[in-house]
Length: 252
Image (cartoon, rainbow, N blue to C red; front, side, top):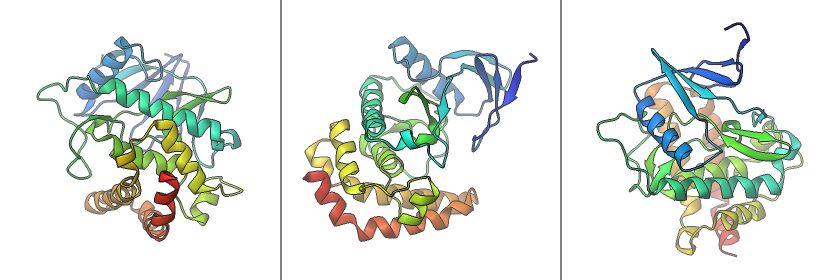
């Protein structure tokens, strides 16, 4: 086709837009992702891409028109309204995937560590840069390549880290947060909007630290995205220094 363009912002895949579709390379994990996307589509979940076809080693999906939440974030993407929408969307996704039957004998992306006991399907990279926004609202989730069975808290931890955000001041400014938000109040709003169970509120910040440490270990082991490690290490220290304050806010 003639009307195609290479979309920017992909971290691990080359994405080409053709008319109102996108074409991406497939991997060993793609059959699992395809089964998940078909399940979501059949269940009426409008916020995930629809699998149209596979062509050789490529897949064709529907294209979400709108803004991708790439850094630095646009001002409206930093609003409390978007924070609420992100938590509510992740909750709907988790609730829906409780009934997803894992296909036997299908590969996943290499895990960063042994996943917690499966409760739901985790997106595993639910962040603004994998979300689509239209008219000031969050309308879609993209890039399910690292999706896998796991715990709600595992997925929620990284989402909170990115959407609240639970980053130090320097990193927050680099990501477009100016002024820097009241992280404690936004963290509570995020947890309330998700409907996080009381028992899990004590565990969330510890899981955020575990999640980021797992990322650092994975990047070190695979020699991938090594430039991100210093940022994660700085944020790990910031979160550890504020763990009590954040946990008290979540429970407040």
